Image (cartoon, rainbow, N blue to C red; front, side, top):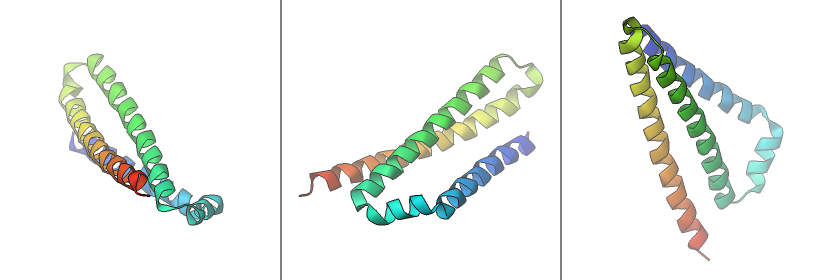
Amino acid sequence: MRLTIIVLITVLVVGTIVISFGYLTNQNYVQTIEKSDPYEKLQNYKEELEKINQYNQQLLSELEAKMANSDDVHLEQLNQEIEVLKRVINDNKAELEQVIKKLSTTESKP
């Protein structure tokens, strides 16, 4: 049960590192960032957060479906995985709300 949680967290961390490394090594993306203003940067970041949140929601749905079709032996383990994923989703939503607030204040400034 702990092993699965560790594996889930490891997969999330490795995935984030791989995505970050991909963005850092992609010259087109770097050039786009250099040319964009702070509002565009925030907008791009918001879009990426929304994509990540969508993916996490999909993972949550799959885990909940797996839990519904699982036997009693793995229910506790699946419950723990679901709780970890729910925390990640809530953290992502909180960060997304902060970005949206920053965007709205940036947008309202002349």
